[in-house]
Image (tube, rainbow, N blue to C red; front, side, top):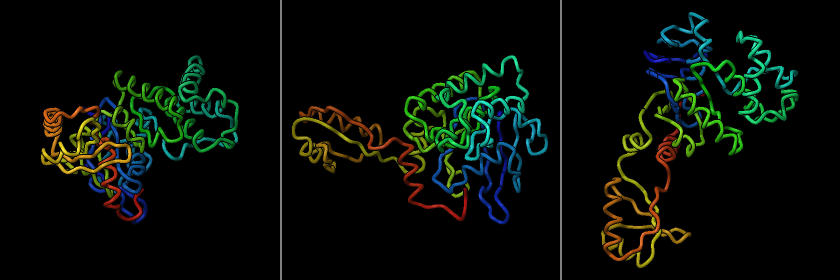
Amino acid sequence: MAALTARKVWAGYRGNVVLRDVDLEYGPGVHLLLGPNGSGKTTAFRVLSGILPPKQGIVLVNGEDPHVRAEAKSAIGLAGHRSALAHRLSVVDNLRYWARVLGLASATSEAQIADALRLLGLEGLADQRVGSLSRGQNQRVGLAKAFLGCPPILLLDEPMSGLDPTTAEQLSDHLRGLAARGHTIVMSTHALTEAHRLADDVTVLHAGRIVGRGEPAALRSALLGSSYRLQIRGSGSLPAALEKLGHQWERQRTGSVVVEVASEEAAAILVAGLVGEGVGVHEVVPVRNPLEEVYLQLQKEGTVGDAK
């Protein structure tokens, strides 16, 4: 059984429908929820965590409905845009409060709090009032709260936002370690390069509907077609060789050229052809990673209504 399931879920606020007929099943691993602003990602996290009841459909956490049985929510650690922190309390006192709410044993809670502070680079801010923190710092405290008690399911809405590169890398390693130990992690992010490396699979949400799911490269092919844009650097008469091989090209300011090919196999054939024409091929790289291409296409298409 999947740890987290949504079946035929419709959800929204007042008369505004945001999610439409959403079906999801998530088990152990790192799962990316991808979509432009307004696609419904934040609403999806609120429904999956048991905060916002669906208008239709059902959500199951380890087989139980968190909107019916509040106890099911204890399996979830949520880090959303609203961190539910007390602004007048210090960072460490906020975490101590939530450790008590979660029922963590007092003998181990201080060690867990220290680990969370260290992971998010918050040791130097432990005694600072939350109300005085920047937005990025507040985001990190919200993440630390979500990790308390090491819940088996983590729902992380934009966890990389406001993190410096070192902390983001530490967080990524931590999430991969949790996934390897059987945790289910669902996250959204605009840090698409990091997401490409981190995620086991990607669910694409657009205008409140799921329009694709799978590995990044497979999603790109399914949603955008099979053509690839490659940046090529080489010595010799690269443009002339490309024209002889029947390819159009665009010169870049860096001296490289960009070529469109039909598939990865076609890219390999092109490189072999260039070598056969006496071109020294120094570098062949995609212009963008697959997630960036999918994301940019969704942005061009726009979204519907006031989705969140």
